[in-house]
Length: 99
Image (cartoon, rainbow, N blue to C red; front, side, top):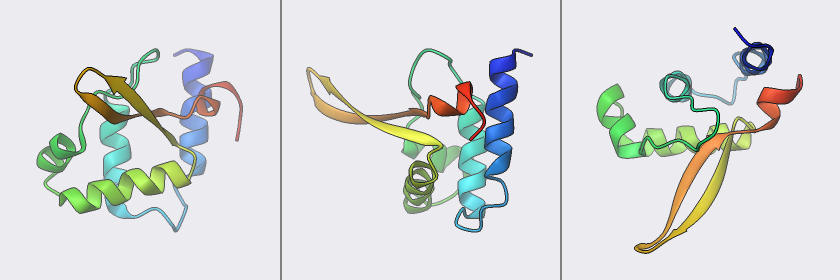
């Protein structure tokens, strides 16, 4: 396991006891971690997460907002031919230093 990934896991672990994060947020976080790509933003949509975890889409959306507020995820707007859309990635600081 790389040192970078160890730092990431340690930083994620520090958020485990955060009372602001719901149980659904924990489920979403673990699900997103299964798709970690060190170079690219998440390609997993909220509707897919909702379906695969069998939780309401509104709960998934709330989970994303909680993860952004906790500085775990970063939201980015991507401009494309079909218009703008939001995508998310793990905060770069999670990989580089203890938070």
